[in-house]
Image 1 (cartoon, one colour):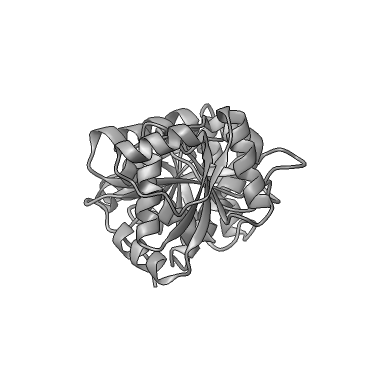
Image 2 (image 1 turned 60 degrees about the vertical axis):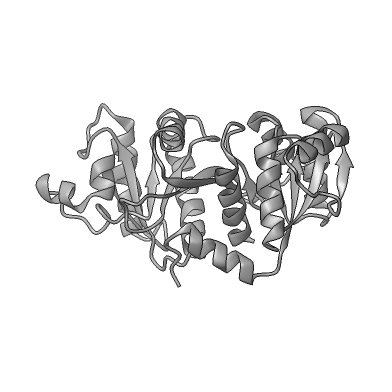
Length: 299
């Protein structure tokens, strides 16, 4: 069954066995509220890593009952990240979640060659967006990890996004490679990447999805835009995945959705040994709760 909303994703998560989530630097109110709410719904079993005194203080201030959750003492960002990663590596947690710790710090621990959670391919960040103006969930990559991805990185980003889309029940994900224009321009590497990725999918060098591009964003999500501009495509207007050109564009889109719309959204890292629930530290508890749902859906 294809998951078309976060409500459907939540229902699915509630039907599955709960997953243990190690929250790195848990002394952050929105993350703590989100993980406690997920625990109340029997979706997760939290393991809280960080300064116990500060965690307990926030729990008291927010009227959160965390008495049954394990607390692992850790001081500072680096130690919190390292201990949370260790919990996953040792099998004491199923997923990793970012709390107050900076993205760079938790990813350094996760990417450690000997003690981290590296997978076989590239790691990439995925944003899942639910808009009342779009007919299904939209997956966007990469707002947080790959700064200026080249062709090889984009192949990995596509594969990661397609894996997630299929977990959400999309049988043949439609991937739109997005930039500023919808025509190949030799002066714009993004459009060349899009053309190559499209042809690679046609020749089954990238499998399990349809890829088209270059698109401007409107072409990717609006069938009317494609009709007006004379674009014949199986992907445009019906994209499941949009691949943004670089971290600048994707992060601006992420923050625009978060702060200037009422859309629902979630953020996770894929491609590691386990999903990493990763949002901006300034994201609210709803974004973090929905991110937990998204991470759980991949385990």
